[in-house]
Image (cartoon, rainbow, N blue to C red; front, top):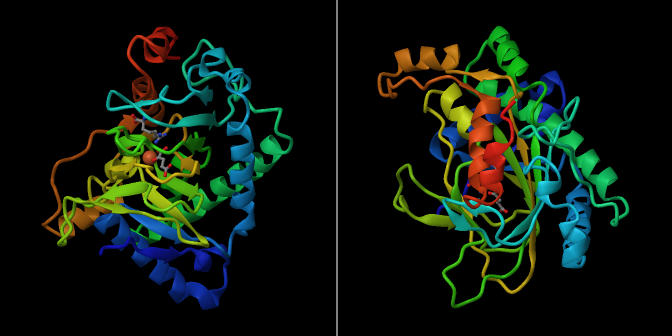
Length: 339
Ligand SMILES: N=C(N)NCCCC[C@H](N)C(=O)O
Ligand SMILES: O=C(O)CCC(=O)C(=O)O
Ligand SMILES: [Fe+2]
């Protein structure tokens, strides 16, 4: 049975000279994991105490336990159709309704305008005391972790200090997204899916999920005897699940690939997960990195197809529009101004 690699980020949490060789090992392991899987566990117990996300999951449960009409008060349509509460089956992946409900938050913007795509205001549940405060602490930590992992990855790619500074400038004001997701159990005799197969859009996804096993599945697409099958990415204590988004495919010209994943939750409990998407800056122009070009020239084997640059914000907008049924939010989303 294939299991995803576990990478300890601890050596990057300090500047100890003594940890230099451990940092090199972590970077090398990140590089290998990104080439081979695009998905891995990140051991973060030296960074956050596990009681912290556990408490967030409790707050999330308290929200999902509210009467439907209370949750609907935070509906996406109150805002920019991106920020707020999506009821069960409102989210769509590949044209099919997802059997989950969720609250989505995005990086706050200056001069919010709910008629402008992605430019509204976050809707926090005021009925759950502490919800906003505790999740804001988490957001800040995940942003910090994002920069740490990005720097570790830049070393794994053999980037120079100047090259890292240039990449850093594309992610230092991350247009992050956080989702708080609730998954009821799928009916046993049903071919429904909790979240359809997809790739994440941006840079790094940091997923905390409650201990429910057999829910998140990752598609193995790069060799080994299990190639072409789905494996479970069950939670591991002290770790979060991390995967790379499509911007990494562009930065590395396909050397790193974003991996399909889905959620099929047939267990009897109500599952809660909290993915944090550490993304590039809204205005970042994402294009293949020079450090990767050097490698391609050195290692003949890599694909020569050059990925086209994208503006991250535009790419995100095209994706978010697909997250709803046509004629429903996506229809209306299509009519609100694209900046
Ligand atoms: N920001 C991210 N990555 N969100 C992923 C959401 C799940 C897939 C989405 N419905 C889709 O169809 O892409
Ligand atoms: O809930 C999960 O385990 C994964 C959710 C996910 O893949 C997403 O929201 O992008
Ligand atoms: Fe995802």
